[in-house]
Image (tube, rainbow, N blue to C red; front, side, top):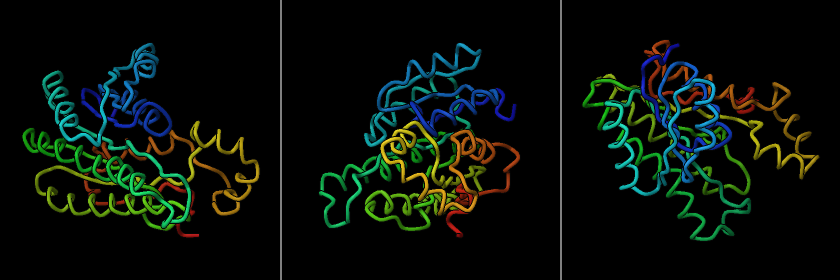
Length: 249
């Protein structure tokens, strides 16, 4: 119960890693606000049915005003914001860099980078007022490596780590810790669908992951929960790789 009585926000919480993280926060005792571009009412209801405190909220993180209104609503309703996972993100179609359209690039940056910026800004403003807080931003193993056909996405994930590290320095003395989590290949519903359509892809992935398997969403959630907990009280500005040793292979 490391988050007992705390208030946590998870963006991009309708499925996959975000959903697993929302569940982990709730199981640890937090009131978790589940934010997504489509209000995740069914997902929040499923958690509430198990006696957990989950509240759905609709927000497009690329919309600065919408993010401000979300944080204002959380504070007005619950009085504070103790932890946040800025997880909402999209991917561009996989193709070489010069073939990515301007619209695709702009939309990827708007969600994957500006969206993190928007959320961090208003989360930090509130955490400064209350005197403490913990933030985790979702980067990727691609935030420390490259990946073919994903130039816009990978550029944003690198930038998220830079933003995380710099903000951590800015606010470390203010009792606000800011870290990033860098998931590797994780067996989310989207990944399962991709593997079903490309049977050879799983073999290729297994070959490149020293752990010999893909990660599970709850394994990323465990890392996020730890980074936001008192157990990680001196961990700040760190990009935590959770990728089965892929990035050092």
